[in-house]
Length: 491
Image 1 (spheres, one colour):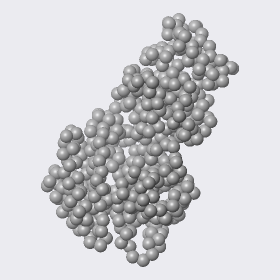
Image 2 (cartoon, helix red, strand yellow):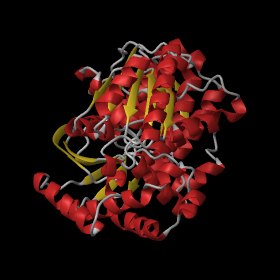
Image 3 (cartoon, one colour):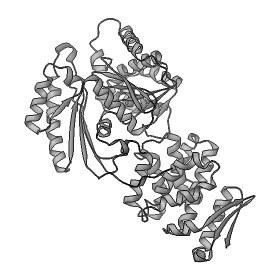
Image 4 (cartoon, one colour):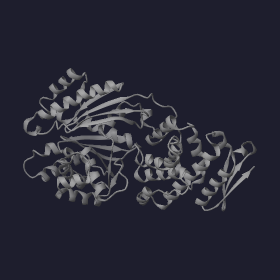
């Protein structure tokens, strides 16, 4: 794997999403390809509430949104945000008084709000998915308060983009049979999107609320929404439950705001028909959407092409490790030990880049902290088994036994090969870090050689002094995990 070590200038970038249900400001900081969330604040304004009847923004929601924008402008200034972009979607786009609202925001805050068309909104949402899923292939559905967008992704390229009124605040005003209206609308959209789409990527707060309820109902052990995948059968069970459950039952399972939970039944209704009409093989949740798409919009092509997981890990090593650059060398040293180095290269590199970033932590809690950072951290381009594998490797880096109570619940997400691979990677990192300290030249000269029944660590005279009792012990631990004998040889 070719590693890019040039980093984009560290800019603090702010984006404001003026949606039909909520108004949110996110400030990104750090590694641009896999951004850190410096600040994130949302106000549930309900700008689009009642708009089907009045044609105007909800008066109370408009006042709350303006108040939020005034606060966001002040915060952006205090954070020294270098770039602040605001985009409004369906409610402002379609409301009679939408232009007047944008003018008032500009006069009182100095923020110019761009109003995205439906297809522009769709494109931004799709770009958000690509931020976390480079090369994604399937169909994106982004549901807001007043519109639902569909976008096809063809191996990372954005294809057809459509917008519709299949959203909770708009559907509440539909007369006649609601299910017939939803299905007829979706069949109309299907004519423009006739392909088979293997994955349906879900974007938007209401879809995320559904996923949280599903996680809670099945007692899912990893509370990370991004790349959470649902089988068709599992999703159908949860949608059936949502159809008859009460708001109090939702609240008992989820910390999602009441305003959002009130939209869940209608969003679930749309999702049920969406899955029936488009027939995807799997459904996946994206934590990234329009706001991340606005950040993606500002990236040059070469930055978009980078791996978000590796970029995030490179940034962590660069800013937090004692020996930046050592992780890449360590990964190359470890890879020959694995049965299929090409397949294991990416996760091994990610683990090696992160192996030392928690060195300042208390030694007694370092293993658990590394495990939590990997299993819960903001890492794009990493599915749930990958998260657990990475976390397990880092756990073995610091804890010989690899025992951790919270891992027991996550173990079912890994197969036996992944479990063993994580252990080998972790113990090999433990050996390599002990042997070399942070000296890359030591790893370049030390050889790990596998032969039948033996794992031999060969040290030439120039680095013989780096061997010792601790190194021999950790060599033995690694060899045992690989089912062989460890042997240190001075060559």
